[in-house]
Length: 336
Image (cartoon, rainbow, N blue to C red; front, side, top):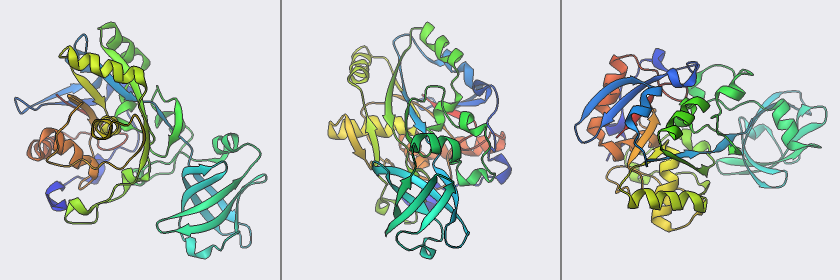
């Protein structure tokens, strides 16, 4: 498989800058892999495609306000720090633009009692130390929600709620598991009332989500590691669902990567750099709810592995023709 095999034409105006409200009123494209059919629905209609005894698996990670904007103490120059993940206590891996302008121990002042100390540069990232009386409180107060770059607008206060799923619980992501953004509390209740089981896993989404594939030979691409955890009760429900012949439905590519990592390694917790592209034998998931992904992205490759590249690209071309909204704040797809 070549990188160019996963390209498609997307008019820029179809990239969603804001989500629709309410969340479950976005459009839903339903792909039937067996019939090779495409249906056009509204997301809340997803209830019609779920059966009693099916299992919906959601990612309960929570996005942190990971973008800090401060000034270099010595010069007053504006510097943006993008926090990736904590290494220990107040030491973090991060990204900094124009990092060459910084020397070890340089300070980036975010607020009067909150500054970032630059420690060292490591290949494609940096190590920084956060100086604050209460890091969580200061991140909430001064941090910005890290909207994907293709949204091309500054984040707003309301993005702190819009870019978070209604079931987000465990802090640690720098990007939202966006397939989950379409669910409301009311829709989840309707799904439960139909006898569908709901369970949760955690995968903290890292910046690798946006890392472009640069190799034409996609097998040479290396994924960033991301932390995942699967509770025992979720595994028990998955096993029970499989035994009863019902469907395990992954909400988003992060859930797919978590469950298929477990299938490959047997580990319920750890770091995964699994890269799924055609051909791939899925061992756990039966159906997939997902958004529309960037051309040439690892996420497009994953859904192509699940539903076949030709069928996915046909569906994407149809979505462009029907003016679906694309990417994180866009419309959804249900692959059955």
